[in-house]
Image (cartoon, rainbow, N blue to C red; front, side):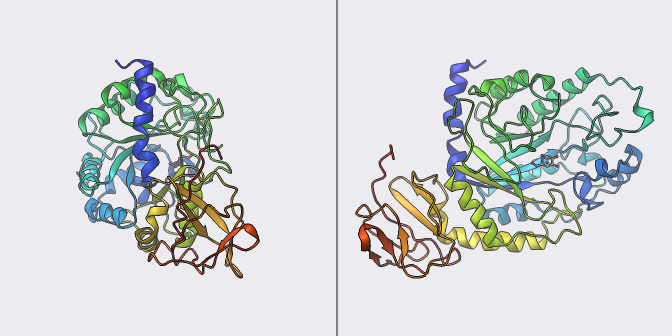
Length: 430
Ligand code: FHN
């Protein structure tokens, strides 16, 4: 068993790749892709297990091609990927020994998680698994009166007395399966704590210790202790006590990044959907543009954070074409400008009015969002900038220094690339 100090030290090492890679793929997939009304459909429509069972018996994603998914993620510039191994409906996308409510017992007959892990590892992409703490299928998960459960108002559940300890043994056992039988994982993404269902209600410290003893390098999110509703934070300075290794703000980018209880910056990752649904939705055309996503990625990195961008594959096992189109454009931009994202973080400078800065060592990257009339003004940087180049093609930009500031003429907007290289010393105490 690792000591607390060993675990704290390991945390610094553990998060190194996470802080470098910056951009990942979230994949929400399961039975809910068949009704195609989002992953909460069973709860929203209060479906009983018999109604939902129809989807179990029909689940046959014959076009599931994890190699294609992995190539899409790689071409998009995504460096890690997180797949739902079990979402709230309790359906397992892997061959769990603890239940028959799993993909290998459907017409699909495949261990979808194992194929995902193999394919993404083959493309050199780090792999994580999402595991729902909620479980609407398990008979010992509290149902009647639980504000999320599909059977929350069903009188037949009113007098049931779930043996929650039995559910916890199941949940811990499944996490142990994933960390024992599926090779090296890079990340475990638990989801989510709410009301009284948080921390030791999940026996979180025991769970964390088990995970850390099996695979000490695995990153763990903060939702054994937090929910996505308030964006998530790291409450404890000690990751051993289920605070996890990174905060997980959801559908928001925190105004100033995320800090722990002592006010120290902590690793964080904003998880965001491409349209308005995590799970596949047949009638949700509200996709974000590539430019919007790129600007959100830049914003996250400019605040020392990551972006976990979601795709929701359909019942056939395909990532929707619109998602693939957007991801391809993001990948093109990252091919030309990835140096301003990977391994970068916040610059110790005020946010400029025309866009955002990211920084890597003594290189400052200016991401121009607003069209400039005349030179782009680099307030306060006079005399410390040696050169300015357009990141996309390395071409030099004219640097002028009127009024004791530094400016450069740049028609470089987000879609032309990012003026890169001021190569100026950034005093760490600035
Ligand atoms: O309820 C889930 C939701 O379905 C989705 O998985 C998101 C992703 O972060 N997490 C929960 C909502 O906070």
